[in-house]
Image (cartoon, rainbow, N blue to C red; front, side):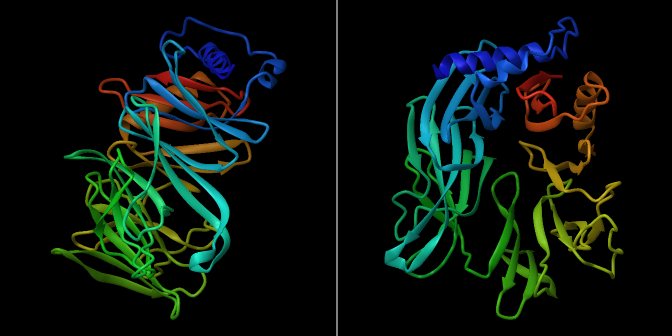
Length: 369
């Protein structure tokens, strides 16, 4: 049943758009057609753009399904219960990372009921699931912060922080994709607020926040360690680091810097987005026309390629990378006067692929531009 429903969704999606050929024009399916398929909770393309993984919801029960886009062939399907799915991403072409959360308590450690995050890795070849941080000595098998995928010289890699119940450290771990076991690669503790990984999985910036004093600080590479380069007292609204900038040795920082730039009227907290060079420590204000609600990073290089802003009639994107500008412009031309929403954008060797959602059409449609 799930396989046939997935095929139906794929067929509807292909009928909605024919961007490459422009030869097929299908009528919008009747509203009854949408009630016959499960709700789509999240969706993401594989690096090649040939496979799509999605979370479907039927009566609060969630299932993971993987489908081949060109043929609608069903690759994998399994129920994952009623846990909330927080993230879905590919680790190379053969594995899918599912991040879920549940409200639980850990009585042995004195942790009251709170939302705990878990990572599971699906291997499409073996059809097996392993838990992230499983069998990592003295480390809870829960995620502390996000799980990040990178393509390194040793292959696809997964990184996340884990809590050591013996010494209290919350180090960054590299995860064995076959066993889920973590190996500590960067020492961090409870004062570590956030960090930025580059394309190769190397930490290029660390933010620390001392809750007792309200002191936030930015630390940049200095030989084999890190040096404190900027600090500010922030008892209420703290600065934040938001991934890589437009070039490999830069990061994005959201902060109040009246010494560098006046606050943007469109920013609710008065913060400004800056690009910071991790080698020189130089801060440059990012040249977005409007203050964005979120940033868009390239799925492979992890470099900043654009941003988005939610307006009354939908999401407006502002891309800076030329290829992204060209592809998104083609999508907008295909739906004049509409506001498609980007769901997933993965790179192919020559053309590239993306998934987008038309704000008035429920299915998610593929495009190859």
